Structure formats: structure tokens, C-alpha cells
Image (cartoon, rainbow, N blue to C red; front, top):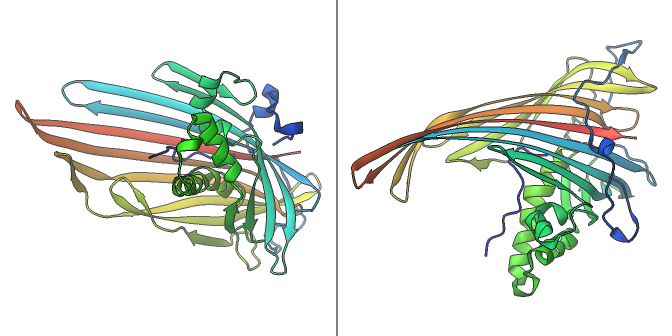
Length: 347
């Protein structure tokens, strides 16, 4: 049995709390994002050294809004030409709160996604969803991958350097997802466990890594740089190795807080063969071209990300060839995927 926990590849995050876990609609203003840079002022000593650390206060809620914008353009040429254009905007509201800090300064935090809003357009067909407004059971089942997240808190363990060690207590999300799909009684414990892992790796972690960026353990200053290599993964027919690269652009002030303004980049290396045959179709790829850029405003006073915006572009091209009734049939596909992710700490 296969479950697809729908979440686009570059998506990414997240607030609010209601009684009895009811879904309460929020105002449009709560979902309104701001893609501009934070307006800062210079500090007295812009070259001073500082440490970047996550440092949350117990008893305080940290409310985040994450907006994921994507634009996917595809052209498929064979006997005819097919054009596909899909745009999708998803906003998540999430509350984070510190539960515990162990002797190794590892923090356990409770995470609660309280509202989600989706607006999509697929070749002119509009799709909309907002948690708390959708009451029809059929429609809620259609958006089960979002509905299951709402008001079902889970937990994470992170270091003060932003490394996510564990995402756990996601069982309520699994249970809700299966209830919405109407299949809880027929699912085995092994299938539930596989679904739980899929939700954590495919939905929750991609959100959380937007809020928790790994930072260096040593002190830094203006022009300091560092990088972190991600575990390898599969992309199309290639092995993908991503490395996140960061550089301190400046040390500034925002209200009464100090902010580190950080440039965020991504280096991607694709390895593997360019050709594959699947079900009688021969595919020949050009290595995808990727680029990424971004800026992170880390609040040194509060010990968390104040705001960030990252952009990604991927260009894909491949040809297709197969034997048909009329001889060899050929085609090709071109795809350009643009995505932006905006994270905002909301007071």
C-alpha cells in the first residue's frame, strides 16, 4: 500500500492555539507575507566578533510564518506539444515552545502547526484550501496531507547550533491522516510506521530546516564563511550532493536587537549516468542546471532566525525514444522550476 504525503519538492513553514484542538479560521492578514529585507541600522562596531546560537526562552511561544511560492513550467513535445504551468503558494503558521534543555544543552521543543493556506493554479484551474474553513468530509480527505498537520503537536530535539537531531511524537498526525482517508482499520503497524517516517522526512523536516539552519560553533565576524554538506539523495536518475554555503554580510541592529545578516547559497553536484531505459522507453538527460540564493537575518539577541528568504531555480531537459507501431517515436521535455521560501518570526 502506498501513501503519497503531498508536499512539493522545494516547499517549505508556521502558529496560534485554540481550545479543544478546534480548527479556527484566521484572518487574511495572518497569512500575508513580506518578501522585503528587514530594515536595519549599523552597529557601532560592524567588525566585532560574535557567536551565533539558538537560545529559546522557556515559557515563551515563538510564532513563525513560512510561505512557499513555486512556479513550474513544462513543455512536452511528441506528436503534439503539451504546455503545463502550475503555480502554488502555501503558507504555514506554527508555534514553537521550549519544553526542556538537557545536560548537553540539547533542546526539546514542542511544535504546533495551527493554520495552513493554499492557493494553486494548474493551467487555469484554481485550487484553494484554508484550514478551519473546509468542513466537507470529501474536501477534507482531498487535502488530508494538510488537514492532518493542523493542531496535532509534535516534538523535535535540536542543538544550540541548529542541528535537528530528532523529529518525534508524530503519531497523532498519522492517525488523523488515516482517519481522513477512511482507512485506519485496514492499515498494518508496519504500514503506519512507514507512513510516519514518510511524513517526518517528506513534510515536517523540510519545514523545520527553514527555521533551524546549522551555524558554526566558533565565533564569526563580517565576511566569515562556513558550509555544511547534506546527506546524498536521489534526484531524477542522478545522485545529488548538496552543500549549504553561508557568509556573514554584516552585523546590524533591528530595534534593540543585534542581527547577523547572512548570505545563503547552495552548491549542487549531480553524478551518475545520463541515460536510462524504463518500460521500453529510452530517456537521455542533460544534467539539470541549478542555482540558489538567499539571505538570512539571525537575531543574536533572541537566539533565533528573525527572517529569511531563499530562492531556487532548476532547469531540466531530457529526450524520450521508443519503438512504436509506426517505427521509432521521439519526444522531449523541458521543465523550469522556480521556488521561494520566506520565513518570518511574528510577534
